[in-house]
Length: 309
Image 1 (cartoon, helix red, strand yellow):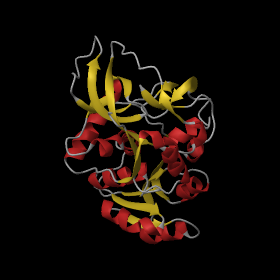
Image 2 (image 1 turned 90 degrees about the vertical axis):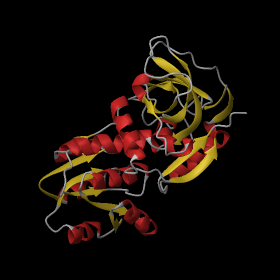
Image 3 (image 1 turned 135 degrees about the vertical axis):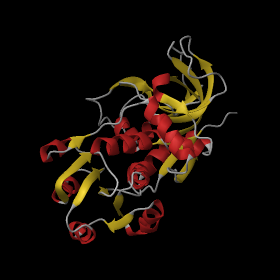
């Protein structure tokens, strides 16, 4: 089958498009014919070796964890899905090797849910990792109706879903974003504030008594500033900086969860959560997709699509 792979850590230039062995399907997995795969910052971080201590590579590595596609072969023990079912998945294992930037992927059923009927395959491929991250972090924060939630990088993949979910929970959502993305954040239901010097004052101008919860996606100085913006008994969570625990917060690393993913499918079909595609590129241009992701200016999602020919 055709796939993107890399045989060593490095920049986008290590990504190669070509033939790799087709995956074998275990008893608790299904073979998915990939229609699209989401691109996430974690993909280039894995490619450069930044997660080496956490996820051991088995080279050559096929990158990618997000997928949308069609089941072509269920494993021997699988009763949840049948051939022809349209699915989405956050197909992450505890090592790097068998990713979704390929014509086919063997996906454990614990990583899958049915595809939202109202989303295209490309849109659906942008939902699993970002959606699960936002869903699981907001649950960890215990965001409730009437509270004020601060979301950093609110125009990005994770941030944009967090804004939508926060509004659905009945929270007031303040989102940091560059000025060019302020209208986009407003369209999601958030109140935008600009990055940079004076950010703390701008947030305090909107929430003088502090915010009930902060969803940090940046870390470093932004995390330290966020801790100072919390109201009494406020909560802090980060997906970018483990030092959040030093501020009494929680470090969150997204997990595959079929029930959570199905809930996101339902919310997408209720038009609670949408996916904005900033770029859609063919699989063979995955290196370009990685470069765009690494620039950190993406509004919504980048996905790669797979040609069936």
